[in-house]
Image (cartoon, rainbow, N blue to C red; front, side):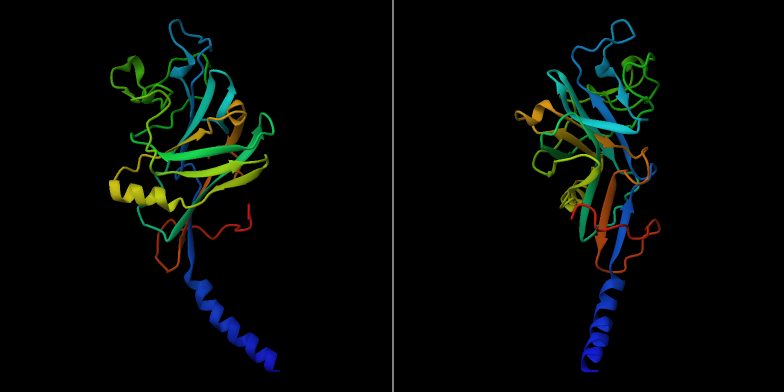
Length: 252
């Protein structure tokens, strides 16, 4: 009887704590924009005088980060139009590794970018068509329009980013989620700088990891494998988009 009484007390103590916590989950294509940009030096375009550095993969299920081989590098860009600016107590960004070119562990770096990007509508690179207006970010452009008349170049090929604010994860396998902890550092930077342009994922530049490539599911992928931004609130702040809490057990 005494044990039952103590259990009832514990339940009444825990319930208000659990009830006051909430999670905002950004995961839909309206919340998360993403694309892959290519640094393929030797690729052959189907357009005379062009190369694959001019293409993006914005409308694709899979995104790649890393080096397929020497001179064949890809990076991933994300932006989050679904974030309403409400600062969480903590945040996590998760990506699902669908495939890997080999079994090397790979550290992936995540940095905030310094220019506005567009996801783009390309279904891949080298698909036989000149990019449409506002077709999205490429290796050389933060965004690209026909004829470069109003395109915006990166200052350096492959994207401009802030090195002093970063998150990392190490991808050790495929068919599972991997987590960038302390993502609130990125949100705090956006809040303080008013530059919510997005983030870039780049590979670890050290052998042998820099000779492998990881394939990440995009926001256009299956609902069970899409990228997730999780924002944790310890109070009952009301956000109109707030989703139900998702599975916390992944990758713990």
